[in-house]
Image (cartoon, rainbow, N blue to C red; front, side):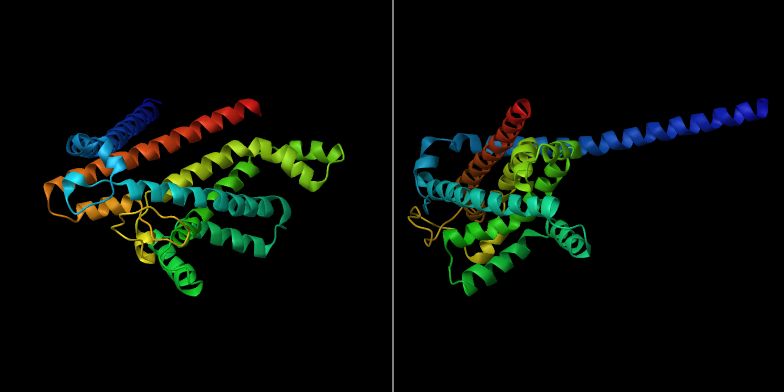
Length: 291
């Protein structure tokens, strides 16, 4: 008996030692990432906080750092979001509703689902190539605002579809059965019973997808978004630029003043991302209370 007790004690001690070592490993890995992120944020704040002045938002880009701003890039980003949001919401949520509520569970549907899940992880530069071939050349939209917005819509569509499907799938089947038992049609069940419960998750996925889109640069560079725009786009066919491209343009210049402007642009972009993520949390909480 003592032999078995000793063996059990050794096994328990070995497991505890392994757990402790893994705990230390995980804490170390997390600490390295957090420390690197904090160091990067502190460096950006120290470089860019002095440039966070009204001129940064009211002036157009200039070849002189003292009078340079990001007005055209900020407005271009907002315009692109205003186009992307309704288009991606309609097509993304519509596709999710069809796949979850109307499409049959067959091999063809599984292939579509697999392709959508795969597209959600495709590098963004691939969408830039697709946008260049489809919107810029085939549809002759040139290097315009609408071409950029549609390209970014392609980028976020798989993400929105997957998140909307998860939200719709999380609605209990009993709610659908109760609606059908009361004589509701398929669409009435989907629109009045399923969607009110799924809308918090759908909105969260849409806003997080939008926040990813405003930080992407590669697809817009591929379709020819300009790095220097000293005017505001007046129509969908006008040239445009966005905040990440403007930051890239400033970073490519050797002057210290432009490096500071780039840091201030990064701060503005981070503020936009945090604002969108915070709004996603507020919307989710608001709708969850009303469901």
